[in-house]
Length: 187
Length: 187
DNA sequence: CGGTTTGTACAGTTTGAACTGTACAAACAA
DNA sequence: TTGTTTGTACAGTTCAAACTGTACAAACCG
Image (cartoon, rainbow over the protein chains, first blue to last red):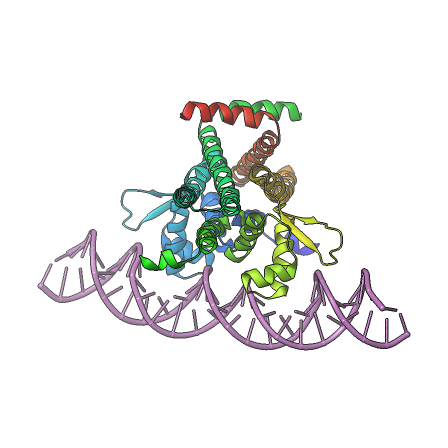
């Protein structure tokens, strides 16, 4: 097609880059963020240099407010960090570009938070049922019914304990050795 | 409080159960599902017995259509399975109650799908840039610019390969041994 | 001190996703 | 065959989240 030949080279490179950013951002819902926020991360990642809110607003054609809130979200996920350059008064942000780190951090931070909350709720429920079981007037059939629930709660607790151990493993050095072995096996 | 004493026992047990279901469902956004769908899963999990769409509709006070689409979503995530009981004409569904399995399946299925798509896009981009680099008229500065992008694409590809090896590990027996070790260390 | 720049709180708007009700197709019953 | 039951497609509605613009507080400048 003639048009392509008429495009100047940096335009072509830019288009290719945009396609990759789009692809990455479309799939960042796995991290619980919207495509817009994903696009912002991609932009920062490929820009290399830190950017100001106004840079981002300009690049993505969105409001400054959106850029402000989006960049905060990315910071909470350890995907973006503050940066400083002397002589620049505006806040600067740059992409955390270690994707392995981002991946493991995500679990340690987000998932652990959630499991902790759930464990609390389940532990409390387990306690309340235990107290209920103390009642000597309880019929045998009631007892069985409650026990069924208690067994489930115990199962959930064990699972969460296991999950947390798994996250410990994710943060350990072993991870890389173990996965390396799998990679070599793949070849 | 007097009220509590007046509640009959199964009501109390029910309330405790609902609280746990709510807690679990609130946090199932990590699996990319809404609280409603999470609540449906929780209901099926604690019900034990398989349920029909009408059972669910009744239990959750929602439309049958919602139950139908929600249960499909849960099936795609391997969180719910079809069940059969003789004499019952309606479709029956029961919760997959092995949470370890659900967790590892989630990665194998959802994340792998996403990485595969991204890899495709990045590979294509890398190819196109390689072809662009063949042009002998390319200035040195253009070359460097393109090379910077190509390095990033290569980095992404390596990361995705690593991720896939990690998912292989998740599906392997090793996982349980390795995590077991961490759990014992925790005590 | 007043004047300027920068980030964000907040209210309002837009957009998309969740949810509902109806209408129908497929499966079954008689 | 006709009548009934069951699941889902589809159109419409409702609701929540994303996004914008304005207005202001905090920091900086002279």
